[in-house]
Length: 189
Image 1 (cartoon, helix red, strand yellow):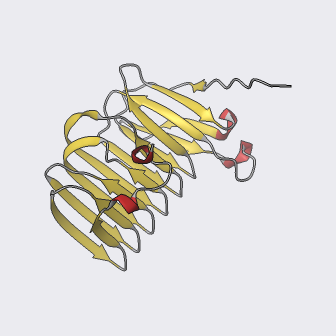
Image 2 (cartoon, rainbow, N blue to C red; image 1 turned 90 degrees about the vertical axis):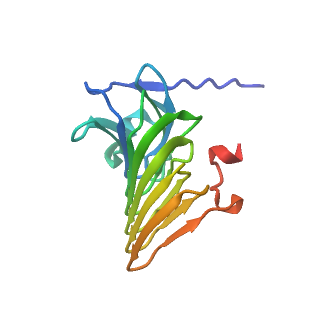
């Protein structure tokens, strides 16, 4: 007997505000798309595992909250934003804009205590990228990259941007290759 499984995304309520900064915390796996109507949807996993809140300024925080989650459950969240001026990942998980974002002057990227932030699809002249205590950032700045790694981590970049880097207590800032692209990345589809 053939069973047809139908999955629909759970749309979560957004706090009031115009969000241009996203943060994924505690193992949340977030994909980001550019669109006219902001929205947060849980594509995979239990919606009760996800909290969405407003942070300081224009920051939208997506948190995989452990109290309602089964141990090890992977939750994938889709966020639609008009513009993305900054992105962050903390305590594991990932955040990756998909498709091409409109050209912009700059984007700030930060990873702390593990996780992956892949902002290669954001066409920015200037990228300010920092990793603290593990994790990685993948980026393709058009003109300049300001890269800082402290206490371990990796910043990989593609293209011919001018790079200014600072590494302390271990870490790497290096030009990326095709082999450096994570499995499951938009570049591997």
